[in-house]
Length: 323
Figure 1 (cartoon, rainbow, N blue to C red):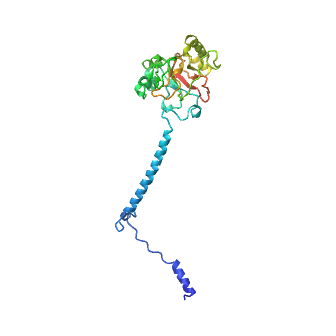
Figure 2 (cartoon, rainbow, N blue to C red):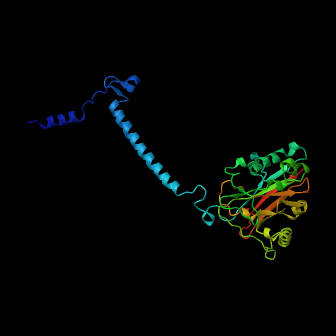
Figure 3 (cartoon, rainbow, N blue to C red):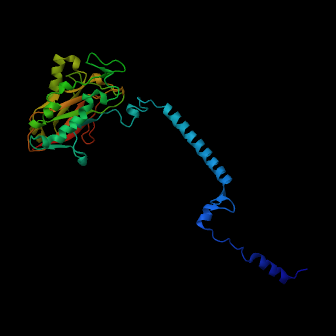
């Protein structure tokens, strides 16, 4: 029978025995391929094959599940009709107003239209910018589907379903490329465009006796004249461009709107039809004062278009400076 001392020695040897010797370090070549075990990176070919089959199956199933989820998701979307429209959408129901030409991209935050003199190089950026912007209106092939479903609309002749109204570019004279958009005469043309909102239907100011007090007097007079002579054209989103401040109003000079003073109602509602192009209004500043910055504010007028100068809702601001 072992004594207490012998038990202690056995226990000491059991827990404090020398660790087994580690194998010698393998070279990089042996780590890649060990000829003794016929293994690559420590695993046999069969082992690597099993791992490969597992990951191929795993990612294959995962990819199939993602593809099925995306397919189901896209079945809920229409390529032409937004899922959320009007009040349910982020855009809302108050369209914005945009202008062209825009300043150079290196000064993207600016809204100043500035050029010197009447030489072509001085206003080349602005006319080239308008050429690019208006190209889709002049060349039907640049807009998918346009040319096949264009319809010659009128106030009493709206477009049939699936067709879009033509934009008559010949009615913009003198705001044409051939005339340098009148920039060479220090009487520049600015084009206005109403932002597209799917399904939005304008509520027109078509009664000269029921117009807002904030509407410019010149526009009120124009609407009253249309009401007398061409009442069928009253369903229009009217446009006004004025100097923002009293000094600007004195310096802005006469303003002409082409082809009419607003966006014809037969272009609305916008339904994302193939080949659709937004109507444009060319604003021709006939005699702006030179050598001074003129702050201009243009507004679109309809009962369901609200204006906020701070937020630029329903209006657009830019400056003119012709040296």
